[in-house]
Amino acid sequence: MLSDHALSTSGVGCQSRFLIDGLLKKDAWTVRQFGAAMKHVNYDVVKVTDDFIIRPIDGFGNREMILQTLATEKPDVLLLFTDPRFFIYIWEMHEEINEICPIAYWHVWDNRPAPLFNKVLYEGTDLINCHSYLTHQMVNEICPGKSNFVPHALPKELFHPLPDDQKRAYRAQILGPDRDDDFVVFWVNRNAKRKRPADVLEAWAKFIDQIKVPGERPKATLLMHTDPLDQEGPNLLVVTELLGIKDTVFFSNQRVEFEKMNVFHNITDACINISFAEGFGLATLEAMQCGNPIIALKTGGLTRQVVDHRDGSENGIALPVELQTMVGSQLVPYIYEDYVSNETVAHAIHQMYLWGPEKRKMVGNKAKDYVDSEFNLETTVNLWHETLTDLCDNWKSKKRWHLEEITK
Image (cartoon, rainbow, N blue to C red; front, top):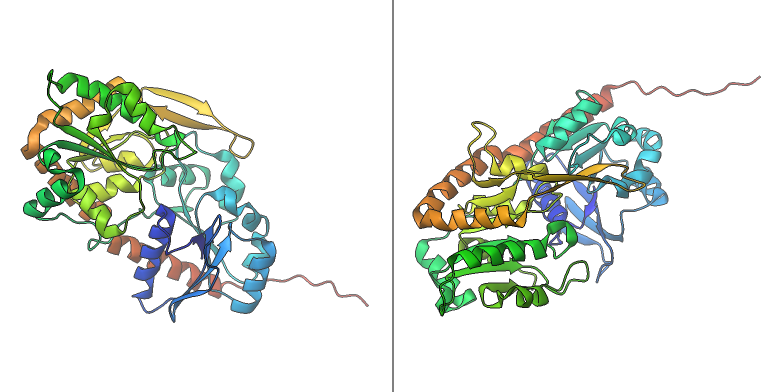
């Protein structure tokens, strides 16, 4: 497996770990992972179990590393998982890899237009499981019958509702006793342009203007789990001062374990994501699994979270795409970015505020039931187990032809 290091805190890293843990419980698999990162503190091989071993690497490997691994390990399948641009060298050598094993890929593409320029990559992949339904649709348009929808999912023991008395105690402990009955909205993302953190703050400021009473602190708090000084984004501390909302925004800027993240979701009333490009969006899924409603833009993988595909109802408030811009690069010639105005976001936050605790709890319970049904980790692992088993079985049964030139 080539992906982010499974013991890292990145979304890809966590999802690879959940998948691997689930597959190992089938007693049918062993996993050797090249755990990618820009740089590692420690490059020692990690033996998680006898069946799960991780070798840390910088980046996502190279041709020589793969050829050596194929020769020594002779794997049944090579599984890729992260942005496709990191695996171009894999697809360039897919015929050599196919001499030993098939290639599987857990894939996401953020938005339309369908990426026709990826067709050669899809044709060089033997199994494509997509973790957003939009990606599944687009891949099937380009290479019909090539894709399966296998969404991200989360362990229930990691993200779950806590008793009400614990929620209130944790809220007072983390946010302070003066905020224990505030309306609290949670934003958890990297402070980077794609996530629109400054726009979230401006929308929050517009909402605060609607509820503030002269001489009183607004009974509302925006909890932002991010680094406000990240070089990839704006200085959020300065932005809060500019907008006059410093006393209504609380920053959590340290990496936390799953248990603490579960607490954060439980002390908040709703989770918000207005990213202009979002392949999936794990934070909103975590929130729904904890029984909270979400406010999310209908883009990428967020759409199937905030909108119940079975009946069109909403698991919170679905924000419309009000503007699309087409952008691109030399590797990605075209893709849409989806935007919603800060005024519309502020209105949605205000609407969620006016719902009150009872309606938020009712919608949150509906969201949790939806996750239990449509984003169930056991189902995700089973789908991977079945599709990988079928891939390997069919691959082994194929007659591999080789052409040799015979000279006199």
